[in-house]
Image (cartoon, rainbow, N blue to C red; front, side, top):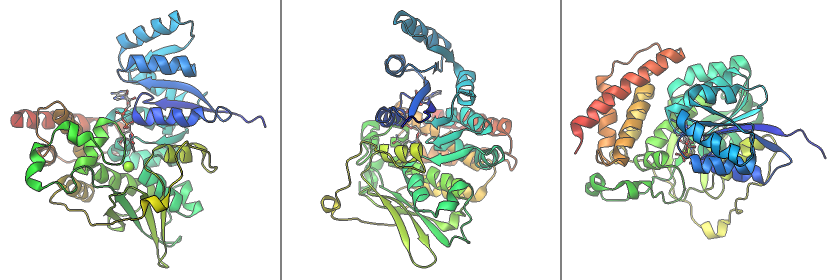
Length: 401
Ligand code: NAD
Ligand code: MG
C-alpha cells in the first residue's frame, strides 16, 4: 500500500529522546520522512544524522556551528539547508511542509519553538515538559484555539493518555463525565531512594546521573534523582489532562514497569505496563491512534515477578514539596521554580554546588522572586524566567564552594 508519509521535524534530534525517536522512525520508512533535525552543540552527531536522513533543514543553536555544519554537508554533496538560533527552530517547527513536531529539546529553550508549532496547528509530540510547566494555560489555550494536536511522550503522561477513555484524548479531560477519579503518577524514586540521608549532600554528578532503570539526558537524570522531575510531571499532568492537583497522586514504584495509572469511580484502576524504554511512548505518540513496532522487548512479567509501591518521602525529596507549593501558589511560581532548577542543576553538574543545594537554590529563588499573577503572554513568561535565572545565579554564587 502506498501511504502518504508524515513529515517530521525533530527538535533536539541529538539528545536521548531525539536518538530514540530516530530509532523508531528507522523501522517505519513507509510511514515517516524527516523534514528537519536540530541540535545545540553536537555538530558531529547532527552531521551524521543529516547524512543518514537527508532532511530538508538542519538547525544549530549557534551561527558559527551552523556554518561549520553547512560546509561539511556541502563537501559531502548534500543539499541540506542549515539554519541557526531560535528563529531557525521556529521556522522549521512552523513550516507548511512539516506535519508533526517532536519537541525534544531540554529545558526552557524548547518553549518558543514548541509554542510556535502549536500556533501553526501542528501535531506535537511533547517530551519537553519544561515548556508546559512554564506556559501551561497559554500553551493549552494555543493548542485548543488553533486545533493543534498534542500527544504526550513523557512515559507517565503517555501511560495516562493510554489509560483514559478514548474521547478524553482529544482535548481537555472531561473527567467527571467519564468517571475518572484520580491519576496515579508513578516514580522510580531515582538512585538515592534508599541512600542514608546524611550521605545525600556528598553525592557526585556521576552518581546522580546513573539512573537505576532509565537512560536519559543529564538534566532529567539529575531531576529524577532529586524527584524534581516528578514535580515537573505533576504540573505537566495538571495542564495536559485538566486535573486538579488534589486528584493526582505520586506513587513510588521502584521497578518502573507500571508507567502510570488512572483510577475510576467504579473502583477500576487501569495501568500501562512495559519495559522502561522511551521507544514505547514515542512509537505510541508517533502512530496514534494506530500502534507500530518500537523495537522494545516484550515485557516478561514472570521475570519482573514483583511490583512495589510506596508513598514519596518529602523530607528526602524537598524538590517534590516545592513543586506542590508552586502549583498551589500559581501565577509565575512554576516558571520561577523551573528556571531556578535549571540553573541549580547546571551548577551541580559543573561542581559549583552540592546535590542538596539544588532544593535550597530553588527554595531561596522562589522566596526572593516576586511572584506575578499575570503570566498569560509569552513576553511575560520569558521575563519571569529571565529574572528568576538572575536570582538563582546570585544564589548559586553565594553558596558556591
Ligand atoms: P538531552 O540532553 O539528551 O537532549 C537534549 C536535546 O536538546 C539535544 O538534542 C540538545 O542538542 C538540544 N538542546 C539543548 N539545549 C538547547 C538549546 N539551548 N537550544 C537548542 N537545542 C538545545 O535531553 P533528553 O533526555 O533527550 O530530554 C529532552 C526532553 O525530554 C526534556 O525536556 C526531558 O525532560 C524530556 N524527557 C526525556 C526523557 C528521556 O528518557 N530522556 C523522558 C521523558 C521526558
Ligand atoms: Mg517521565
